[in-house]
Image (cartoon, rainbow, N blue to C red; front, side, top):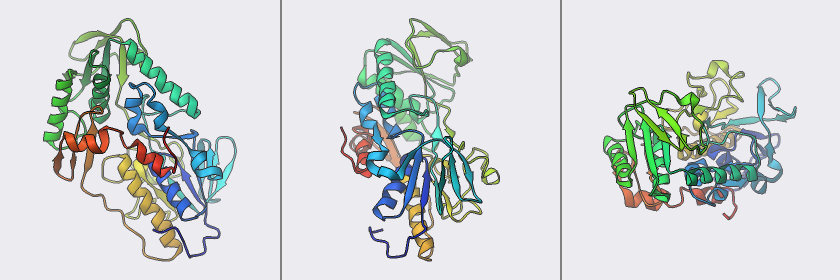
Length: 373
């Protein structure tokens, strides 16, 4: 897109709500184009949560997964919780009473889920890093660990633990037979199963934990009794849940009630504009786009939204977003993985090279124009 915008940008001020993968991509592009913007997030640092599972098992890794917003975006970053969007006044209202005016709005609020896969609390970078270092200690204390949920996060978590601590007993409990994401090719899902078995993970498939509410999560105990709906009982030291991701619609659900899909995402047109609001865009997990919710897609959405803000001001045709063929890579510990690009199987060597070794952490540092520790 180049770094010069010849059109008069006076009066243009973009507010981006949410500093996940889509949010930082949009902020970096607006910064490069010299367009006025404000990025808002309740944390003071971007969380590269693709690497959150490794940060939960490997000592010292967490500091690579948090990147300060203010170092990158200076006074164009505001830490705060968005409680309301006032469409009439074109203001984003924060919990502390501050009102941020906008000419254009990008909603990039992402999704929420349980720790350690997600971190959804107001905290400083130091507190966030400490939360993961504490989790590493819980894993290290535990001889037996149960991972609940065999979607992509669950299989990656089980593999990360077994890679770092091959001597620990790890059991993965999943309510279905097939593991990982349902969009994946059957041969990819089969390979996921074989990698886990090779690493020594015990699989309990087609069983659901039925005493989850009573269990302590992410904390070492001498003896935790886990029971399933099939009558299986087991004692373990640590229970980690890797399921239950939900769209984070808190900031916008009351304002855009009629534009919400059933899962809480915002209905958008082909230009990623929220239905009926041509100056408001939704990107990443909170956009109702028919494709898996992935960091990679959030970055693509950000480019389209920024291009369309520029195009609309320059009165040029808007750019449509077309979901492409599925690219999905599963890192099964730093030494293994499997995935697919389009309809084609991608094996261990390629996945290890592209994702498993550093989980794209260096890419986020580059986007934020900072150097990793």
